[in-house]
Length: 90
Image (cartoon, rainbow, N blue to C red):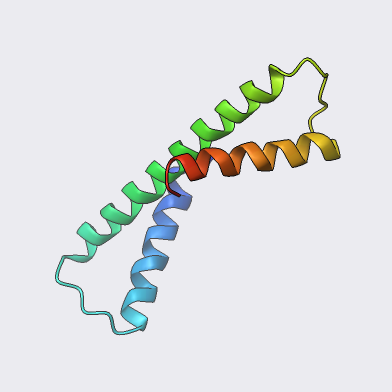
């Protein structure tokens, strides 16, 4: 999934607002917390894109011509994605 910089900023603000709403005691400045949240979101998106790329390459290597969006493709995509996530402890 690809998120724009604006959407990532919006999400980081929402996370900070939610923490404050639940009376979480924050020892860092708001901007430092927002920056850390943005970094986590960006890294997770990069990991997701990398896993997607690996899984698609694996599916393309099958001798059987799998059509993206078919039930068989969807099942294998989910299976291989879960395998990659498990390898990474996610």
